[in-house]
Length: 343
Image 1 (cartoon, rainbow, N blue to C red):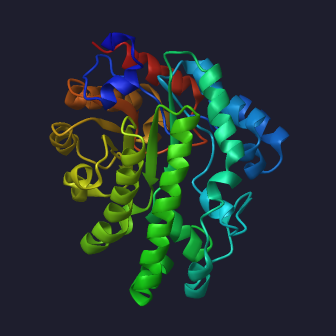
Image 2: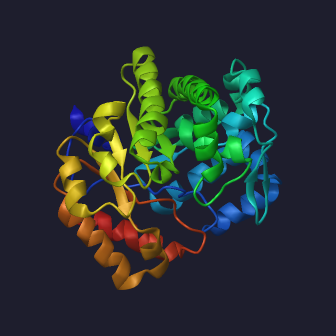
């Protein structure tokens, strides 16, 4: 019976498969000409996220082209603050922006209507499960509370998230309230994605790497642990991947403390350390996205190193962060063929 289940779900349950299943973060994106064409039709980036016809199409594009083992819902981590009426907008060349929030604003936040607001995203999930090949895992996702909070405090991305770190020190009670509210709202959102047809979900903590030891525990571990406990209490079958980019040595206890089924690894994680982490359960990663831009021998060597160190345990092959717009689609095909040809 087990070999009829979707490969990524088998790995999330602890199986080791050779070759390992693979998908790529941001696999639906600007490196694909068909994505750029659909993006132009959609108008704004948020219209692309909130219009199921477009969101389904761009999610399916890399599956048609490469046959990845998973499709990940096309959306954005900032739909949560958008649903909380923070006036999120995406400006070409500037990235995401929103109205920055202060201590009083946090006290006025209301998360009750978030899931209802995001109904178009849930419709995309439902349609994807119907249209995807049966063997393809469908992944939902959201941003981790810390990462989402950094954008809400600053109103935009910053190199080291100093505005959010400073705010947390000056207004600790308000900041904790924000993190826990985001944890609860995000958990409900992921439960809704699972109910709509997502097989598993990933929590992206893209800015975990800027935190010190105590702050990592308070801002990255506790809110994600709260989310996962809530989701698993409601949907015990749910499978969760937690990706704390830049967390380094703090990954050693991250799985145990958060309750994640698998942990994502960025490209800076040494493969010997990754192999130690893999002894406790599945890992996902961790090819440097620049190797996909380079192609050729650099790409092949990076793939081979990961397979050599991690290919005999429970592994979901992936990048260590999202694929970049500069990546050559032919290099992605080279990657897929190299991983799938591994013995």
